[in-house]
Length: 126
Ligand SMILES: *[C@@H]1O[C@H](CO)[C@@H](O)[C@H](O)[C@H]1NC(C)=O
Image (cartoon, rainbow, N blue to C red; front, side, top):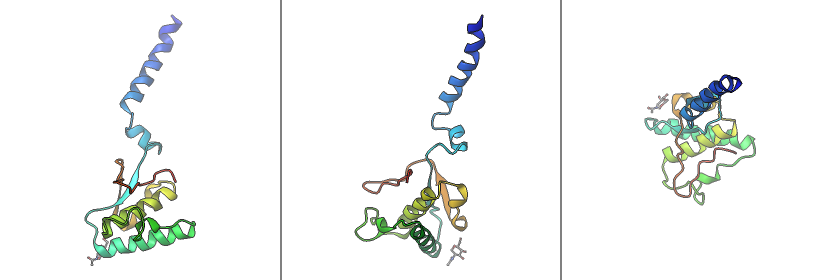
């Protein structure tokens, strides 16, 4: 008797969890992993100013953009869009992954797939 009363909510919870592994519920709660990258359509001047903005703000937090400098692990490919995405994400992570920290005048987007490549790891827990 008591067993059937308890088991229905538990069953619902298990269903909810299984449908939401890596899904929208966790994202809405801010618990899932998200990254911030530059929109592919962004022009070079927007990308360059995003790099300047993100790196100067990170600098005030004592954080460095040296990963996109010549000896850095994310220097290659040496393109504005790569460098911008790396530091825009760093800024977004460092400020706690709030949606308004991934705006950059409409030239950024949040992604749920890890943009890391090769040795260039996009940190998400900073
Ligand atoms: C680049 O994009 C920004 C933001 O979308 C826009 O304000 C600016 O006019 C664009 N610049 C050029 C040169 O197209």
